[in-house]
Amino acid sequence: MMQMSFAGLIPDYDCLTHTTSASADDIFSEDQTQTPNYSTAATYSNGTSVDHVTWSNDTLNVCTVNSTVCWQYMFRGSANSVVSQWNLVCDRKWIKPVITSVQMAGVLVGAVLAGHLGDMFGRKRTNFGFFLLHMFLNVIAGFSTSWEMFMVLRFCIGFCIGGLLVVLVPYMTEFLPTKWRPLVGAVPMWPLGVVVFAGTAWLLEDWAYLHLTCAALSAPVMLTYFIIPESPRWLAVHGRLKEANFVLEKMAAANGKVVPPYTVGVIEEISIEATKIEKGGKKYSYWDILNNFPIAKISIIFGFQWCAISIIFYGLSFGVSSFSGNLYLNIALMSIVEIPVHTMTFFLFNKIGRRWTTFAYFFVGTVAAFASVVVHYQGIC
Image 1 (tube, rainbow, N blue to C red):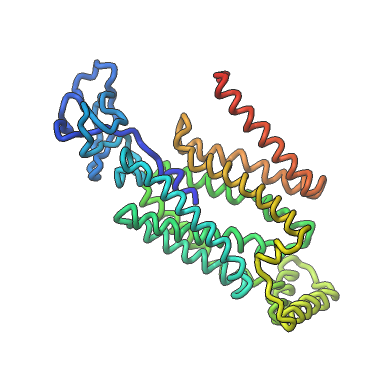
Image 2: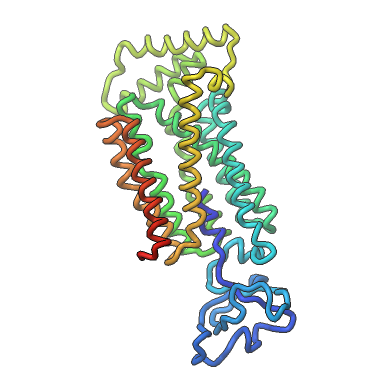
């Protein structure tokens, strides 16, 4: 998901026209005393790297030189993003945001379908299936030969991420009692993962290697398929009572506990209720959410909240390359600040409830957003 925070980086670039070359005085200068010039590494748009070049600002981030359109670009710095890989600047600058939007469209499609897949095939198989597909798609994406191919693969990767986000939460939650369910959101695995991503991007500075590394880091997770059981609730709903009870016994043994006597009855009740619904021929869909006013009202409110959160979170995440300062440090810091909040959420949920905790976070976030606008336009800092 966060790949586009780095892959979409737009490095400073210099415009080369048919009337200029890599050795022309208006692009490079050997005179180190000229103040508009400075030295750095660079990469041609054809992939050729240059370790030491002295630049002139006359051609910096422009699309024409003396009314002549650029025929090639030289990107400053050593980072290789999809922008520098396929010259996604000037008349092609629209491609980068389109790739990001297509990726998020994949997330949407994956999220819509994942719930049904999880109900049909099980939480475990659906979760690990998405994860395995995500891993292989990252490998293929690392060898993309065009931005069109990369965009299609980002859609597919987004599809897998959308599916994982939907399936993983109920999968974990169904192993926990009500009191401990906030723990699912309290463990800061997402921000910790983004911090690791930022460090990896800083070390590699290459979008293709970053995809391959993400795939390699994902591989060990697949081994947990043989350790983590299927959701006991899903097993009970599908009439697989022996397997459900076996999972509960393993969980109890791992915690040094004994399965309570009433557990068998609870599992049977879940199975009986599911059987009644199936025999009644009732098929639930998204329409059932909107067909009941109280449920529809709550769903619309929460849907609006999630929409607002997504706009803010992904807007900041994908726009982090436009912030001042170091890109990799900015990505890491944006996630580090989430870690204490994740931990605090668990205690707040159990202390003041989910409703007031959510309200408090929205209130603080809203005040901070307005304050940042005031600070920016007032030039306070």
